Length: 63
Image (tube, rainbow, N blue to C red; front, side):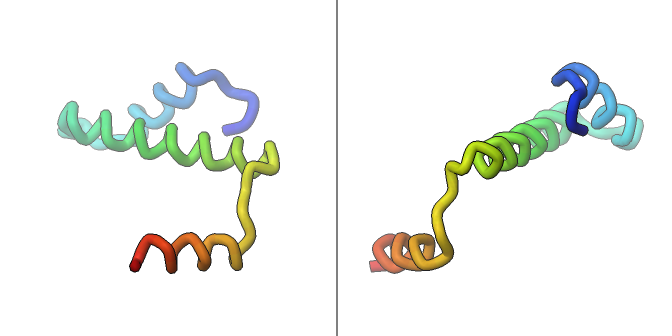
């Protein structure tokens, strides 16, 4: 969806959902798409950590 506006992305997502989708389901799906977009931007900006760094962080969290 590169080069499209946020509104276009939302409309496309809504069009692909079933007619009986609930409002909370819509919001959850849109938030999911937003988080994916944020992650892709972080990768493009080089805001990432190595696999080894991720493993080290996980060890700290599981103490």
